[in-house]
Amino acid sequence: MTKTVVITGAGSGFGRAIAFRLSEAGMRVIATTEVYAQVSTLKAEMRERGLDFQVEKLDVTDANDREKVLQWDVDVLLNNAGVSEGGAVVDIPLANVQRQFDVNVFGPLALTQLVAKQMMKKRSGKIIFMSSVAGLTVDPFTGAYSASKHAVEAFAEALYKEMKEYNVAVATINPGPFFTGFNDRMFETYKGWEPQHNEFNYDALAFPHEQYKIHPVVETTVNVVLGKETSYRNVEPKEIIAEQQHQLQAIWSRDYTEDLGERDPLVQTAYDMKPKTKKP
Image (cartoon, rainbow, N blue to C red; front, side, top):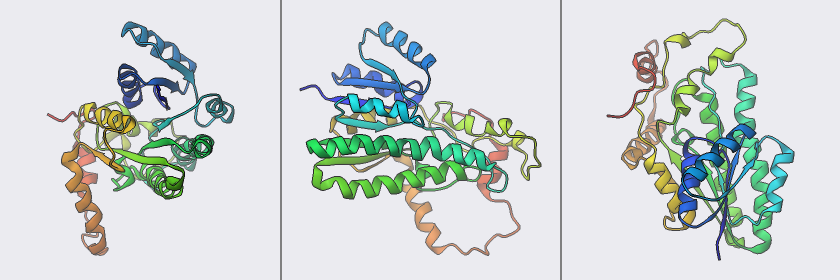
């Protein structure tokens, strides 16, 4: 029997590519987008590719939009929708932090509650969170985004333990720096702030990592959805896993007085890096 996957944030980036791949794999895809304009664009590209799947407008922060999932018999929910708000902890306006959590945490959580209760009743299903390595480690100027992804990690871990007895699987995808435009936009959100005094020169800052092509994230997510990959946490690219683990371990032995008065290396990299730098 064909299974149904609902993908949020399918209008661009990972979600868009994953929708195409899962449709090609024979799943019943319901690809949802934040705004109606993205619906038209996605449908047009779908037809160009000779595919046929359902495209719906679903803003995860809109309660009426979220209710749409109750009309669908969802086998897999891929919580992919998200935004990135950049800025130093001392500068970022609280309204931007609120929006960060509305889109990345509160909206997906409310949607997940609706779907999870349906899955509990039929005692089957799978819920996948598009998290990030930012849910594990933190870079300068990404505090709000990382905090939202740390929250996603906490809810995912709790949900995993709560859903086991109902035969509902939970997993996370943790992309590193991939070139979708998402990371670079994070370092441009300051342009929408109300005039204020900032302690950092955001005109001179850029995302401080070289960025990979998106194929590994798409491939891994498709495999998790299809059940070909059963790891709970899925960091991509795999070559950065050891570095992530090292960063997490290093916090336990950190001396908070060390290097006071000196600029953090990643802060310096953010000043030195050119925007939209791709991995060679």
